[in-house]
Image (cartoon, rainbow, N blue to C red):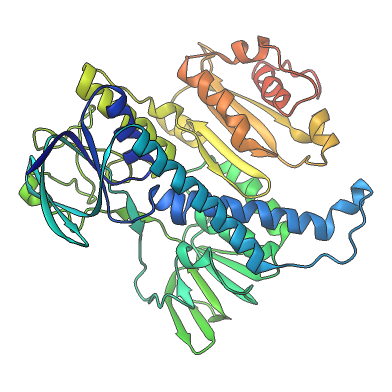
Length: 461
């Protein structure tokens, strides 16, 4: 039986990061992944391919309707969807090969197969050529998540499907129904709307982007609706059925909606089925996630868990931070993740990004706060690149001025939010941000101005 210091189950962002960090710290590391291509859902059929399509579709939309303002005349813009999809796949293939190269460089033993527990220290790996048993001094579960289903909605893998299918439609749908107005639904809905589909988004709640700052979500709703996305909020979808080339989405109290594709995007659930966690002595919490303590230890000695299988937002970068912190804790005795400084980004146009507490959370918890806002319409760089929609909002403690949350909707918000995450990580005040020099002209100046605005000192409005 082969034994290792650390065995990681799953080679997604959390898993491969943990494996590499373990190898850097001198452990004999193995990584088990059932897919031949490494990188997990995020890299293969999630974050990376969706961002490739978002970029391509945004360029197409700009060429169709926005370049004229820049003095660029493109009268006959055409879509080559096949080529666009091929580019997306090239990006994915390049990155998966990159992960494989990192695994090899760090001398991590790779097993291709499905893992299940025999005991807290032993695993059965089902490989194509047969089964093998492994023994690990430490075992880390980083198995990721899978798409959640919806009662009454039957996936057929063609007309009614998940984000996986929506990343590879062979033709632009005439009418696309998106069930769920979260990150994934809005991103992929935007892709196909830009490419020519009529898109209707059905959301059970009375708002889009559940959990995000409401002022930000409301602004996003208005902007995306103006772009052409249609929203049906407070809509309880009871069924979605396919018949031939047509689909029907049934909503409680409303007329059925006919379309030719349905994208179900109602969240994700932990990948715990098939791991035989009972044999490993690993317990789940009341929501079906693996229960862990602050050091990612499960109920079984020597078994740890990170990422989508445990509590917290299902974000690739959250899993990466947990993977590194978990392994550092195993080796050095200390590993920490500041969950207040984990940003979230929606890659629509404009982008939407948040880190820290929302206004709703601060109000509900009774924390006294000040709010500063600054519109991109008053930012010189935003005007120069014709991206003036949106704003930056900074929330700071009313007494200490410590930054509690930053929320951005606007051009390149996903990149701009990094400054806010660092500010929260280091316990900065809004005054710290406001007194730091920001290059001119840059979009980042909007963050400085919003920080000044918490004290009524914004300079350019």
